[in-house]
Length: 131
Picture (cartoon, rainbow, N blue to C red):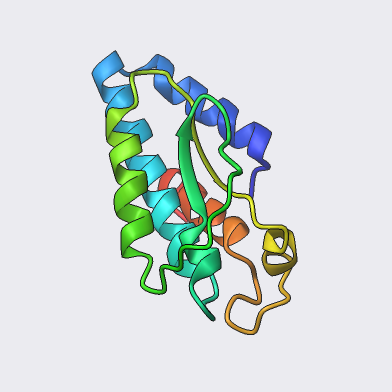
């Protein structure tokens, strides 16, 4: 599996072969796939962690809320709206500002023993490598 830097280089090379419209479509598809991946892989107790995934443009949004979203549907819908509004070549960030996020990512949950981000990243990579 390539590291994040190598994967970004692969994506950059692919982008050079595509039109602006195709890049925008691919970027939005990847961002939505990533968002759904991390949200739905997030462990659920009260739903607060799931409800704290934020999608933002050009800079991470690490703000937090007490709003719970056990199903993940509201969080995904809010993020999808941000993704849909992104202009071509804008960076789309998906972040969770809760302090215990790294603990969950590092396997300290029986519901997500392999984390959320690492698994989603591997899935995104496999979309391009054919694994």
